[in-house]
Each structure stands twice: as C-alpha cells, then as structure tokens.
Figure (tube, helix red, strand yellow):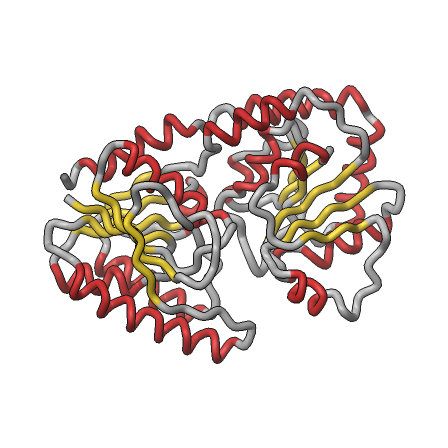
Amino acid sequence: MRIIAVHLLNDYSGSPKVLMQALKAFTKNNMDTHLFTSGKRVGFLSAIPKVNNHFFTYYFSENKLIRIFFYFFSQFILFFKLAFFLKKTDLVYVNTVLPFGASCAAKLKGCKVIYHIHETSVKPKILKSFLFNIVKGTATEVIYVSEFLANQEALHLKKNILYNVLESGFIEIANKNNALEKKEKIVLLICSLKKYKGVDEFLKLAEINPKFTFKLVVNATQKEIDSYFHAENVPSNLLIYPTQNNTHPFYQEASIILNLSDVNLWVETFGLTILEGMAYRLPAIVPPVGGVIELVEENKNGFLIDSKDIAKISEKINLLFSNTELYEKMQFHAIEKSKVFSEVHFEESILKIVSKYS
C-alpha cells in the first residue's frame, strides 16, 4: 500500500505542521509515502526525509476573484495528475477540506480516502457547503483535530478525534529553554496576517499598555506587513516579525501568549501556537469558544475572553504581571496540560488508523 498525502498550500501554519508529523510517522514505519502539494513556497512540508514529493501549481492572491480562479484551476490540475498516478490499492490522505481534486480522483480510481479536517470557518458559505459535500461523497473516514470540530461539522462517516501534538524535538528544546530567566514582560501573538485573527486588537492592546512589550509574529512577508500597517500608527512597544521557521526564541522570551481570533469570523478548531506556548509555561488568553477551550481552562492555565473585549484582556494581562503567585500557578498548569499532547500518542493513533487499509 502507498499513502498519497495531499495538501494545498505549504507554509509555516498549523495544518501543514500536523501533516508533517503524520508523514514522519508513516516514513518512520517504512510506509511508501508520497506528498502532493504546491511547489512555490517553503514550509513545514519542504524536504521531509523519505517522502516522495510531487508538485502542482497553486498561486495565492489577495484578490478574491483571482484567488478562487487559481484555487479551482489548481484542483483541476491536481485531479488529472492523480487520475494518472493513483492505483486502486493506494490510500489517499487529504489534509484539510481544500484539496477536493484529490478525493475526486481517488473516488474515480476506487481508492480509500481519509480526510484530516482542521477547519470550520470556510468562506463563502457556498464553498464550504461544496467542500463538505465532497467529503461526504468521497471519504472513507475522517479525522478531526478536536471534539469541538467533530460536533460542529458532524458527518455520517467513521470519525476519529486526534488532537494536534508537540513534536518530541520541540519539547526537548522547550525544556532546555525553560531554565532560562525571562527578563522582560512580553505578550506574544503568533498568527496569520488577517483581521479575523485579531491583529488589530493586538495593536490596540499595545497602545493602551505602553509599559509592556508586544510581539506579533505573522505568517507573511515584510512587504505584506508594510502594506497591512501602512496607514497605522504602530506604537514603539509593538514589534512585528515576518514568517519564522524557528519560533522557539519568541516563546522563550514571552511571558503570556494570546489568541485573539474574532469568533464571529473565525472559530479556532484547536490552537497549536497556544499549545506550544504552554510547553514554555506561558499562561494563555483565548476566545471562549472553539477547540482552543479544550486546551485552556479558566483561571487555571489562562483566561477565556472574547477578543473584542480589549479592556478585560488588558485587565488580565496586568493582573498576571502584577500577581506573582497567580502567574506561577498558571505557569505550572500550562506546562502540565501541554504534557497530555505527546507525539507518541499521535503516532500510535495515526498508524492505527491507516494500518487498517494495508
């Protein structure tokens, strides 16, 4: 059996990172693993040892009409590539609901299909309906990244709940760095450069808290950052960084980690950056809905607050920086919670799922 994994956009965001972990588990167990993804960008899926890489064309554009054209064109190309490549005995592993061309080709060739579903906030609604109907019509079973997502996007298919996890290598580095003293009061947000990810709210928090340092790490180029903030008066205590392939220094220096997604526009189905921050003993402030609340417990390892409530978030940041006893208690519970999400459990679970088809 060959495993044919498919992902749309290779970058340094959460879903390709999870797929990278799955691919490493497959190759570690000597499975014949192939990856189809867009080939123009560098990300977590670049040059994974023992993975056979295949590329298709996809261009991301800020213009919505151009983006949707390139998206459907990429799936047309992907469909025909796989229609000629696939064998009936292949297992097709589709990461996110976006690469529908892969599952359509798999259906045509009689292959089993596993979908690893990460998202619920697909826009526009007509596209979401289309993509999830493709899942219903082609998938053999599905993997959800959280209980929340499984309930939110319930399908009449065999389902698995498989939480995102921390790589053993990440934990090793975090454990070494945790011994180092934090010298500044730094609030950290790592996200895409999108309004619905709370970038504007983070800017406001920095403005009203000039005595603290705010660090924003976005999955974007410097040119894209300059364009986004060109009309904004960015305060001197807000430091903005482009795409990073090594986020350890940011977690190491930070004191608090935030997720500020607008729950009316984007509901987090898990929250990998929050989990990574917790491995660095960082108390978290996150929205009160979505998969992220399966990581953060109110008043234990963080706070659950709507991102639009800037005043309350600011109040909790000041409380954490002024109350040493509370901060240290939350540090302890943060790192303890992170230990639940181990790479060993992920590998065992993913192998159990795919081995049924060998």
